[in-house]
Image (cartoon, rainbow, N blue to C red; front, top):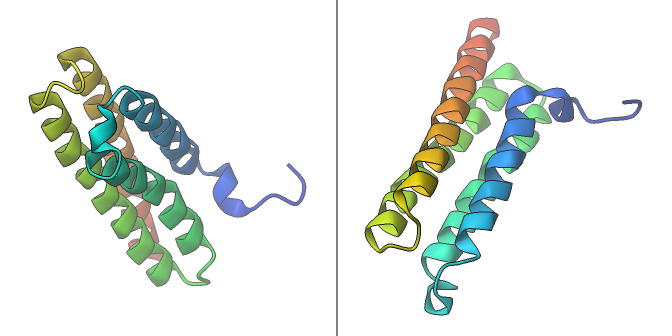
Length: 122
C-alpha cells in the first residue's frame, strides 16, 4: 500500500485491531450501568494495544518502540484481567471468555516476539 504507515504492515498491529473489535462486540451486551465502569476500562485497554504499537513505531528508535510494545503487552494483560471479572459477573459466558483469552494469548506472544526482536536490534 503506497504511502502507508509502517505499523499498518505489522501482523501484530492488524491482530490488535481485530482484538479490539471483538472486545467492542462483547461489551455491547454488558449492562448499561457498567458503561462507565468495566465497559469503559475494557474498551480503553483494548484500543491501547494498537495505539501503543502505532505510537512506538513512530518513535525513531528500537529502544523506544520496544518500550511502547511493552505497554501494549500490559494492555492485553489488563483486558484478560477484566474479562475474568466480566465472566464472574456473568456479563460474558465461558465460550466468549475462552475465545477472548485465546486471542489475547496469541497477541501477547506476538508482542513478546516483537519486543525481543527490537531489543536485540537496540
